[in-house]
Length: 234
Ligand SMILES: [Zn+2]
Ligand SMILES: [Zn+2]
Image (cartoon, rainbow, N blue to C red; front, side, top):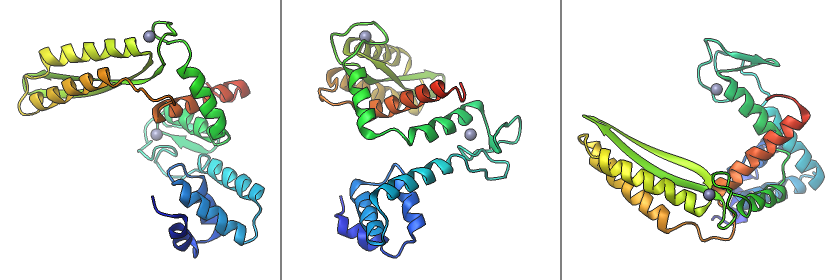
């Protein structure tokens, strides 16, 4: 990772407003965020103001209307049957909901999300109701071929270790029997699916902490819960 100084040099000429937008974006590394905070503080902004304004700007992004035929959430064409809501245009109900969920999620702190994710991880498996092994987002892989058409699919499921392994066994068997029979992709997809399942089965996340995928899922769940509480949608 680049040191903070690198980002301070990168961002020193950038306007404060743009920095605040950057600060609230999720894909910035910690050192870059720290650098932006330092620059803004040096320009006279207080920590509270930096937090408040960047959050407000981040939320406002999800309320922006492009005023075109494109979806205001995903950017795809939303010409036929668009969902219109509060001046915005969405290609589907799903995008409308995702925009509102993303807006609410801005207010969730990392600590709250982590705490909730840990609770899910040590809680009851949503598939088999067992509490014996950690609940995680688990992957399984399936390759299928019909004559010359080949397809590969990655499935995710929130479940315990035995439930995850069961999915992997299923994916392994299906791929083993009907994955091969397409040229050229059948064998390639099949080998990838077989190894993917084996790897997932024997490597059932020994980490103590929730995975990034579980954190993401938890964040989404918390935001949906908050939205339901305020009865805005859903
Ligand atoms: Zn969309
Ligand atoms: Zn289970």
